[in-house]
Image 1: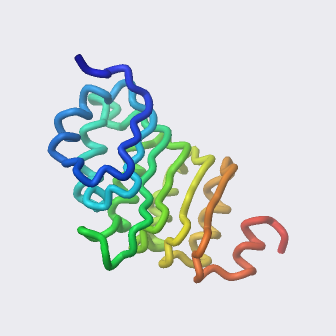
Image 2: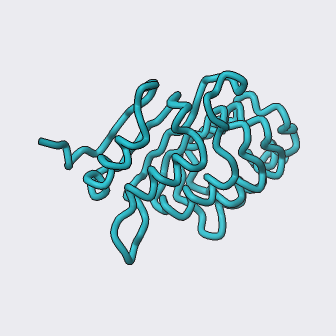
Length: 178
């Protein structure tokens, strides 16, 4: 028996979870799964693993995209303690292409994501994001804030906690108070 009607799957904090298991199991969920959380599964939070996971969830052609509306890829692990490099800008391209209906995305503490990566995530066709967690994404700057303001009109919840490179003028522009 399997749970092929499963809509939400939270595998957070599962250090023993193997990519090979997900490769085999996820195709059966490609039509039903709407929410996937891999928080603090640092061994799976790298560019190669995310590409494999999203490809296994992709619907058949012509779509080739996932049905996901919520994806949580944040981590609380300090960078030096991670077993593999964190996500990079490449994963932002993969997520944008694979998840066009994404409404909620957590990239908390994904320190290699840059302004260019966030731009790839938001363009050329903006995702319908209403929730975005970019807390501790220390490589992001004011340019990212301006991209969010320009491409994410439906945002309802945004975390920029501890994004220390952001300045007051950029946040004012985002909030429309300049």
